[in-house]
Image 1 (cartoon, helix red, strand yellow):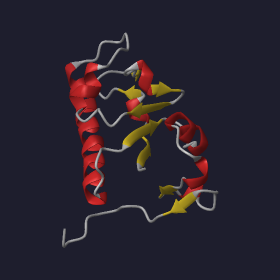
Image 2 (cartoon, rainbow, N blue to C red):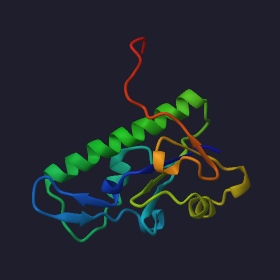
Image 3 (cartoon, rainbow, N blue to C red):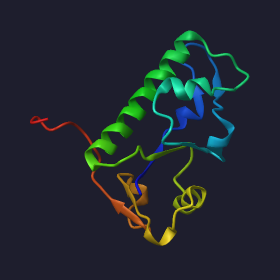
Length: 144
């Protein structure tokens, strides 16, 4: 099973570029656990996510557009990964605002820890158990 696990604090704590405000974002409560949000495979569009927004702070139109565009890029990446890997369904998408915790995330997803690995380009994770270090993505090859 493929799970996309990314550290993108802005989907949990949004720093507005349009006013001097940091806004904690709350999506569907069942998606949240600690400083992580678990977007299920059934969520396929930014509008699906935005419909579940429930934080008391009213977002400005510009903030909504900013968050929506960020969500669109994240969800498009998930679709590309699913297509390239030939998956029958979209993978789970886990977004964290804190350092990645593989064991806790696997428990939440009901996945066995013994068969799980995290491919990551974060140099701070190099050499840790269950981490496969990869080179950071920098640019598309010219042939693409």
